[in-house]
Image 1 (cartoon, rainbow, N blue to C red):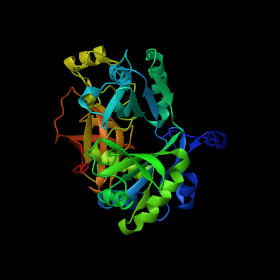
Image 2 (image 1 turned 60 degrees about the vertical axis):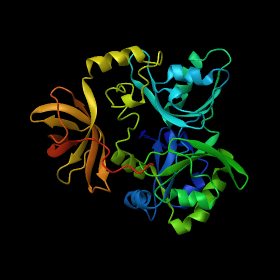
Image 3 (image 1 turned 30 degrees about the vertical axis):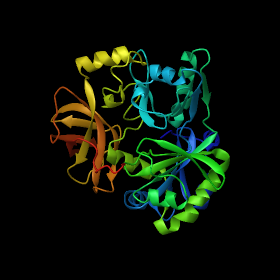
Length: 376
């Protein structure tokens, strides 16, 4: 999370259009990507919020996420020539996880969800802190006739996640039958919105992209209908434990300008056969040669909880660094993602040690996810 060290800095943080609703629920706020967002709520806390999503339904305000729109003749082809994944693999009405990489180094500028509306219309949701840079790079490369619009503040995003999420949205008359990684437009009490079958928790879930001016009305409608489903407001702390259990990367920790898709085991989101995308040449070379380090999972043997930045050892040799680490409420143990050297080669099941404030804690190398996915 972004550190804020003064009241003056705090006043520069952007706020969600739902900020007053969070305050009324007793939210504890934290700075994240330049926004002041709810970390957890009174009467809940991380464990209850996490459990609600794994067993029932929770709603997250993720309005801090960026929004950008690319329109004009050939917009989809233009995006496809810039971002890593192949938009040709999906149809109109579908979404795709993709990466914006630096052309010179192959490092990840951001990871993004792309929504294909038409050949001349693509909507992107990047991360909060990286939206301006993604937009800047796309604008600099855009051909005549293609417009790149930064719509970061124009929309709110509500993530309704959990095994009962479809029941809740269905009670509001919203569409829920579309497939994973697809989207549908709808109205709720006269408010036009987009219902996306996407999320960051590993559970059945939806993300509602709503005009910012109507975010409160949609939030209130969810909670008015949510009591039979035990709907719970969830903060970014639970979002972090949920995504770590799934092994989903967080940009700035598990992917970054210093961590390529090959190192971050995100090569599945690269259209390797495409003739062009930013970073193609350097990434193809790294893939062919083999990366010097790769992102792996770690599961604690004892009660230790790994945290980002902690060193990983095999015997007396340092072999890597924890990039994300937390306590898994589902498994009741510490789990982590870590960048581990490929030499010496470590196999799943091997035991390494993490330096936790001067004490070595044993961890088993494991392949994420740490829980069974239920997204479909």
